[in-house]
Image (cartoon, rainbow, N blue to C red; front, side):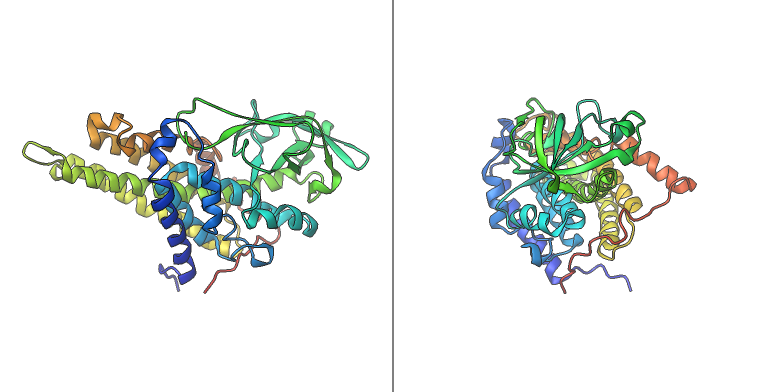
Length: 402
């Protein structure tokens, strides 16, 4: 029997994130967004709210909540600001959940438990200056010498690059396969910021997510212990695709929260602003824009919830996650454009939040697989050219609470 009722545990996760957004994010976000500045207190606030490991197993320091809880938290955080949701997408979706699934127990003890407790921060590095959606286009190499791998290369557009303690990075361990563009030559490594040869920097001048830290990671002859190889050599591509499945899920849920933020701001303004002697919300074309936001919110939410349900039950879900990500991001862009239209000339002013919503909405249609990538994926599924298979025999099933 399908139920649309959330469990008490899922509602608890929603409240945790909502309270943080209302008390810590919304009151200060305008200041940090205008200054293009990351708020260093954000991670501490999220750790204090138990959000940095809340959907990880209790044995590794988490609270044992499930994927629906993660989606609800992402929706609430992005309602506050995209930069806050990005933290969950990267730290949990792209780092912690993959480590929980693919790493050895020794690696989990060292590199997962501190992150689940909020003492350390993790991030993910696949994208490079000349390689985005084309993952096998990366140039970073990892050459084994004795009991270490020597990494050289640069990762670009990495969220939390200048903040994270641990990096889950991808590199070629087989140079012949690199030349042949055979993805089975890629491997995954856990790299510490403290390793000699690692340097990071922040990218300035972004269109959106200005309050988030985005940067690069450079590696020059970085000696990484062989013990930090995740899984086996040659499994890096599968791990990266697994990471993206988790990240896309959080982006879909977050973008749904942005749609709701656009709707709420538009409703409030349309009942206050008057033209032709009545509130603009009484005009039919304004109603149409708000109706489109409402519809976009409702079906985007159903899509990410379906993907989360499949994740909870351990079923293959790449198809559902891709669709949720594509549609929610598309609807968030449309909702933000309409919200600026509802505000009229004031929508161009950073005195009102819709200007920030508009800028923030664009990035999600590019990262975690561009809208074009997801369009092609869905077409291939429909045409029978792609089959949805698990990226590992068993997906992690996080405790579903009640």
